[in-house]
Image 1: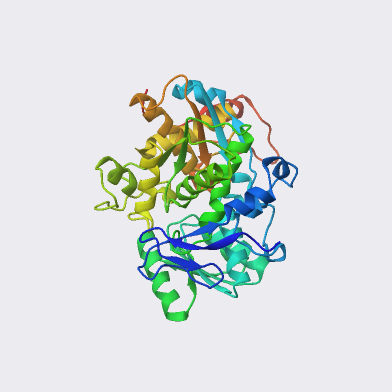
Image 2: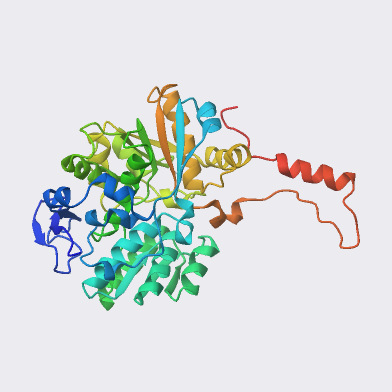
Length: 420
């Protein structure tokens, strides 16, 4: 394998750079997007060939930036299940709903995809020191793949992030910095350090290869639906790399002749007051004026995503939408989905369910709609959000009627539905 990458194109000014020179951003400061020789890929591989390959994201290796198979750093990430969820569909008012469960990835998060693709390519180019700002799951994923690749990872996150975020990174050998401030503060402080010490800043959108790993989610959705399309894909949006990646790969698949010109509606889901939601509904081309909001879903609270203009462009190009949801709705759907579908969603994943219901109420989706939502991490990463009056039975005691009643109360507990 020698790869099909032809170069890197700026998403802002369209300047084109050679693909085999280490470069993270355009000279104008804009994000770079990987470009491929799609005619050569069309001649080299077919969907039938891909179907016979191992069920990981690297089954699509011709559409990924690594030159040689030996450079791939993998823990079998990707090709995560598409779980039909008929009870959720009925509750929120759509015809069919699938949960794309990214929580089964290594480190329990979709961040594994970007870490695998990006570290593989950068190490191939000779880069071995990285800065990864995070709210927890991204740093953990980069630390794990960094350990596997034998490269150095520096990660910073706010002190109020769940312990698993920094402890997972630490156990994998990352250099961890806990910041007594907001997510934005952590991003700024680590970015300054990256410049000072010569680390590659691998923050969302600040280098071109994470998008390539994330775009495989879009190919998988279509392949797993028999090369058919859902009506809408709801994606929890922080840095928005997944939305950018899916938008990009749908264009690539059309040029390959593997899909037509029709697109699923791409929908950004954020916390209420989120930057992308605000900009989308105000008709802006970039995010402006959003404020930090304390939330149980920090992964979808980014005041100004670096590639905000590309996220908004993707939403509008696909006749998409943007929806903000409050914490009480997120809490409700975390509990409800667990109790009715058996899926332990992350708060960001639960936000997409709340987003579907809000879109139905707004007339954006209806009873015939076929919808895919993303659960971006396992709920096991968020044990601090689970509590209940579980009985404690003495070691020399018995489970009596009172204990059974208390256990039943705990089992039936759920966050009330704000919609009644």
